[in-house]
Image (cartoon, rainbow, N blue to C red; front, side, top):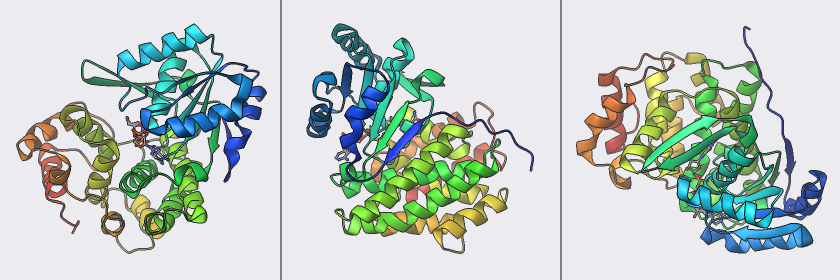
Length: 351
Ligand code: NAD
């Protein structure tokens, strides 16, 4: 018992159909001209949000894309200024919420996030911007959404091929929170229960996508996972995902899904208490194997070779991953990481 816990501010509204509170939440912030952000694929949901806002909707910006390129951020900021927006409503996954954060970073505009995936960005003060192919991330209190509306009905349309890996991406936040350098008992409670909620619901979400109870459980788990990510530092797993995503342009959630069992195996002996909690939440004996089996059971990708990673890039990836020293329960060595990547490349079940 030796910790520091910084509680982040924020209001969470959770429940099926809660999108209908959007207008009231904008009003509660004292805002009158909301700019609604979405990807081109989610214009339908964004229009439903705009309809909830009525007169309080200043306009729609349907240009969010993966990794928040600075050009897109600039265009969205210009649009917010042009419309005289006094708040941003980001409805979508991490990419859309990331765009809201890019606007808030510059202008301080309050964000209402309406997450429709399990990525968890809505609960963190972390932002990312990509310029000339290089993604830079940082932390700033201004980008933390003021209000988060979790409406499981908005996730009914999330296809299994996106929702499955997105859920395991969320579990990865929980796993690393449990062995974080600045771990604390409160966040560990959230993290363990986040794994339990997600692992318990994802198979049913994939089997029966319109099961609102399962969707609610999964989104609840995603909330806890996002809160864990926002509160404590991450380690080897997130570093590797960042490296592979940035240098080899691999898809975000799938990369997390494939690497997580191997990162857990790497840290298994060095973080026995955390791993026992992961296994308990998964309802299995061995955390790393349980994570692998969960991914397999929902038909998620298991091997880096299947998502576009070139085998010739594994050496460079290992080099990059050990370049800047950072905290990890088990010391990070080039050989260790190279072996981890080899296992992940081939999709082997952890021993
Ligand atoms: P995403 O936001 O890129 O969404 C993937 C695709 O799914 C998009 O086409 C989107 O429109 C679609 N989609 C989302 N919800 C849907 C729904 N309910 N129905 C139908 N389609 C839907 O993917 P993501 O995994 O949510 O986010 C990944 C990005 O978020 C990465 O850039 C990652 O770095 C970032 N991220 C940031 C943080 C943070 O704290 N800053 C945390 C997690 C992720």
